[in-house]
Length: 197
Image 1: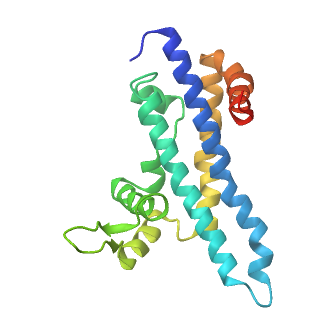
Image 2: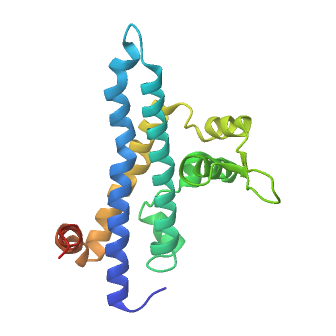
Image 3: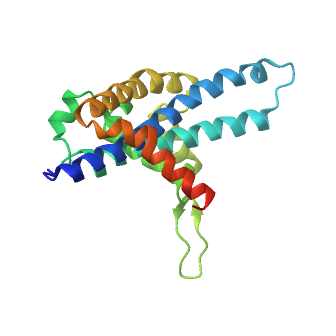
């Protein structure tokens, strides 16, 4: 556990930034899918567009579920909080949300497909790479629940994003520097970078 208060405060600030971004990105698929309903109900739905939006939503979900996991593992757990403290503060478990360790393995397959290297085997020894097998990909979509995208997106909002928002409020309460970092310091530095200052 980190004992230096300056490092603890900075770590809390940075974790909050990451979690706020994850919350925004985890609620977006539900909003996007609601906006897409007229496309689905059209007399002649454009399945290419629908598939593109669905894939975009799935990509966002997978990336941001991992953002939550990585924020927990690299900023919070054993640095600011114990496992028990995180649980008591309401930090959601992605593994529990999905249904256990086997489902996490399926999420890892999806991470490779949507946000990493979509290969089941790398190229080597003068042999080309291979795709993640379609059947394995389909199983991973089914097992994680992402295949039922509208329902999964709603669960994300209700069961993950809401808990993360509450957890961020706890971070704000426990680490007063978080508010200034989120509202002033980080956006100002981002703007300076954007403007080349």
